[in-house]
Length: 116
Image (cartoon, rainbow, N blue to C red; front, side, top):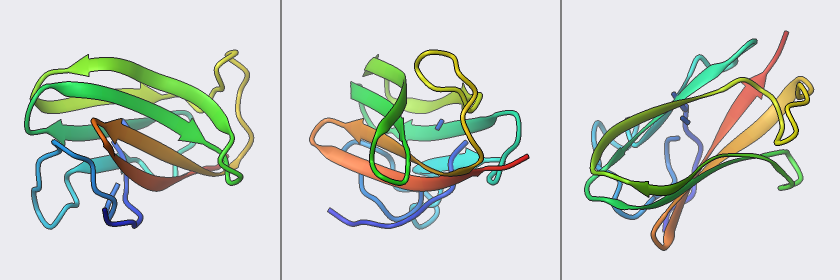
């Protein structure tokens, strides 16, 4: 497993997720855009094959802010949006967060910045 930082469209750049397609030196595996963001950001990821996927947003201390998706995803490109809110719908503070994508037994993690 490799660790690193990436940009998410979500939805990452140097972390490895099992079953996620390797395109363009990993930059397209997990992409977050825009990053930094104000109102919302899009997370985009690619799967080589159908797999169980969990997409979470964590704060700087690793505390779960929200779960954006949990379930089986088909092979191919997927996108989802994060509006910066937590699991209760409360608007999140400005700052650094991490988008964590778990696919099978592997994890990919990337930094995303929320600012006004």
